[in-house]
Amino acid sequence: MLRLIDINKYYNPGTVNEMCLFKGFNLTIKEGEFVSVVGSNGSGKTSMLNIICGSIPVDQGRIEINGQDITHMAEYKRMMKIGRVYQNPALGTCPNMTILENMSLADNKGKVFNLSRGTDKKRIDYYKDLLRKLGLGLEDKLYVKVGSLSGGQRQALALVMATMTPIEFLILDEHTAALDPKTAELIMVLTDAIVREKKITTIMVTHNLRYAVEYGNRLLMMHQGGIVLDKSGEDKKKLRVDDILDIFNEISVECGN
Amino acid sequence: MQTFILGILEEGFAYAILALGVYITYKILDFPDLSVDGTFPLGGALTAILITAGVNPLLALLLSFMIGAVAGIVTGIIHVKFKVRDLLSGIIVMTGLYSINLRVAGSANVPIFMKDSIFENRFTERLIPDRFNPYLVVTILFLIVVIMKVLLDLYLGTKSGYLLRAVGDNETVVTSLAKDKGVMKIIGLSIANAFVAVSGSIFAQKNGYFDISIGTGAIVTGVASVIIGINTFQRFSKVKATTAVIIGSVLYKACVAVAINLGLKAQDQKLITSVLFLIILITSNEKKRRAKNHAQAD
Image (cartoon, rainbow over the protein chains, first blue to last red):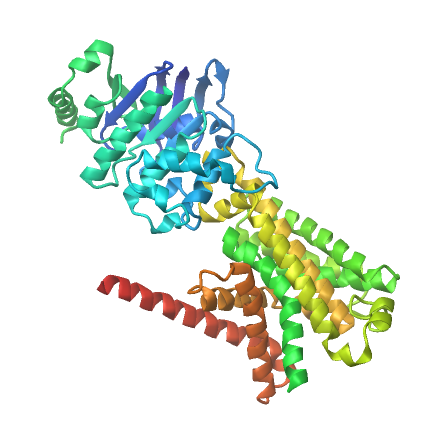
């Protein structure tokens, strides 16, 4: 279980550009939930993910994982339990290393990086099986540098790498936004399959309302640092894209757009 | 002619270890590490003082390796823990080392040509026949370079080595792997400067002296060798980057030697070094630009 308790977050504190994003923000995500998060630009979606992962500090409040306070835990330590896929496909992989080397790195997450051989030859078949499931032919390109792959291929690889070792949370930060519609669809299907298979608690930020409605068992809509819509279970299943669009429009009218 | 070529090979191999160190920071870590200008003479200073005291020359190499590693850790800690910019961290250590080197050596110039070295000692005098003498230095240098290269290759193929490459390639991945990217940078800087100090030790033993000015422009020599080597051999995927860097060092020293041979004086050496470096940078930029234009035309 993940809890954000009474979070305050200011940007540029003490300057004329000071902006309060979160004031007393609370969120609880239960084990096994697949939460899709939508909201306009600047509503605080990505900031929320960054706060959970520890990429940015909070000004006040507490972050807990399974009751353990991780508010001041370094980002890299939190990643022991968290896998993250970014909007930019380049962020999840090492471009100048081969697919095999990238897979070997990901496979060793949570263990020591010592002076033993970087790639365990006995694991190659396992890597190939994982890559074959993607249906992109990556299993035949083990010795190709990741930098020469397409954005979609890199994102698929990043997804596999992020979920290869046991993790408790999967953080998806608009991970289909930089891909063409067909590839985005493919990555979304793969994501859903992996989340179901491994039963990982997942938080997915997306601008694609259809994905938000179709996938996951809880939907959050954020606006100006607050949650304006929170549906789960049966309520979530009944939700249609048009319903969300209506709320979006209402908010926009309030803002004077 | 033969002595000319041998001279180039000797210089090239002696600086090849420096180039391997710079390869780690400049190419793998993407960290412009200027502390190299201080750690190269640091190895030389320590070696001069150890050899004067009668310490085994091989042990002097090993101790140079260790002291270089410590200097690299200092640069790393300044950068990682105190968040000083990479370039400035190197400059701080380089400047501080100037005084430390003077203190270690005791003076700005220490001659050691009368003493034993890895090239001239009881074993080489007894075991190596006289007619082989002209090739002795280059052979020993070659052996050391190969050993250092193989060690580096082996390290880069380990799990720790993978992580080091990942830090330079994409820091985010290292964080995602729940590893502290700062620690990896410190390790990389440490290994790199250890190599550089060994190079300085070899330089002092080969030339028979330590001088405080030998470090000036070490980083330029290193980066130039790396760029020449990598650019020349990037088309041949079979050639390892470390091999390319070693050949790059020899090629670079050949260019300098030719320039001096064409009538320039020894005191022009640093000027030649930097002008050549500039030419290399400009031509490698030109190459990149042309490749880009081609890509757009397609």
